[in-house]
Amino acid sequence: MEMTKYIKTASIEAEQFDGSEAMAKKYLLDIPTVSAKDKVASGHTVYGISTLEGYLYVYKGDWIATGSDGEHWPIANYIFRRTYKPLPVIPPAVAGIIKWYKQHYSLTILLSDAFDLRFPENISNWITRHDEIIARAWLDGYETEDEDDEK
Image 1 (cartoon, helix red, strand yellow):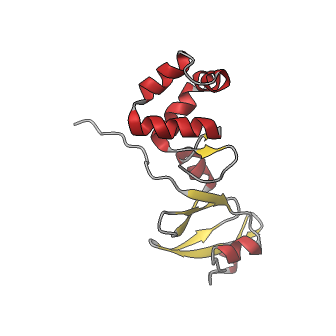
Image 2 (cartoon, rainbow, N blue to C red; image 1 turned 120 degrees about the horizontal axis):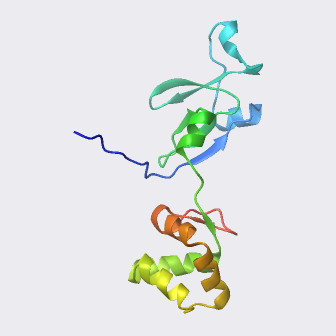
């Protein structure tokens, strides 16, 4: 039997931990009670965080993820870089088009209409030059150029 491949479908918010006390306070990190040897990693203080999976260490350079229920957990930088990528950023006008077409038509029709110049020329040109970004935005969500709100 062949193994099936999967992708992660939930979006998260994440911030790279800079080792500062301000970020430690923001995420309620503490300095764990461990041996002096384990408290220092690459010359930086090691912090700890209580997660749904238990108590985990957080090192400078790790990412602190926030889930849909507000829970936090650390992700090592090398794992984060292999596993996550930011949502595409698109112009607000294109976001409106995607939203409308998702309710009424399909991605194929949106792209076809853009190729047929059924939108203002600058918008049709943007869509046709960025068709892979449009597809990712359609499937995974997006951010707009002047908003931080995920769609």
